[in-house]
Image (tube, rainbow, N blue to C red; front, top):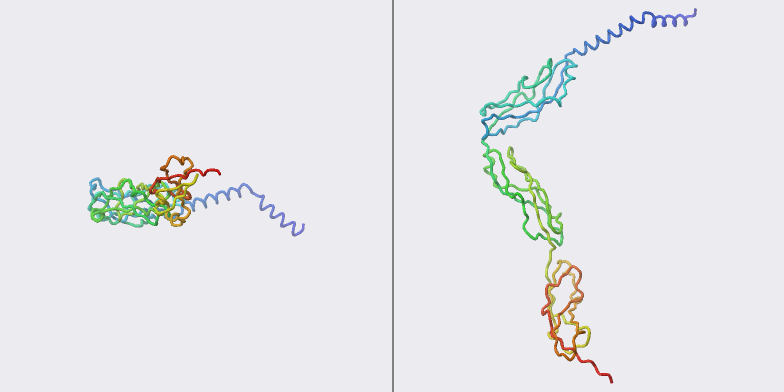
Length: 322
């Protein structure tokens, strides 16, 4: 037998000889490893929420201490025990104050509901300072705060409407003594559109420990219209159409136009022509009173007035054929 063959036979025998005993040994070793490490004492940090529960006789008092939203617990226990804890399933600890004169609250391991065998080795913070003050409420008006300007050509046709225009605020009595009104968050007037506009607007932040009792928002309504001005054009000469006239009295009129300021300012007075149509007037009837019409008024500009609105016209007779 060669040297190589001897080694192969030795390895084959080592693997296949007493297979059942060897597998049993491996299984027992794995179980012992799991038991030893599962029983190992470990530590883990979890966070638990905090809920303040005031005493039943403290209706006119309020707690103005900085209560933490959550506290940190350092837990000890076996790996299996600690791994079984889901922080999301831990109920918030209730900070129960039995006496309004109590100045401190100390957290105790008995405040927390934890699985059996799990110990609390540390609580952070360990306590909370308590301070109580008189509670009050005030009814105050709401002020609308605005920024920006309406878009060019728009203006507010009426005062803004705020609903509700008064709100109730509750909080420490000393703090509310200086609260006479509340502002809204800023409304940007550059967002105005022609016609009705409405926003739901949040009210401004309040002093510490004060809060709005019923609502922290208001409805703001505004109505925007086109910005218009008037421009007067004086002594415009009347043009007759539909025939020859002997006389127009008066010969000139004054015109008032109304429209957006930029369009009125860019208007050329020569393009506005007062006119009377004499085509239906019988030359033999003498004087006729006719309305004055305007030609050349641009779109978007209205005629506010023509003075006089009517003029007297005498039509010339038809010329005789030779």
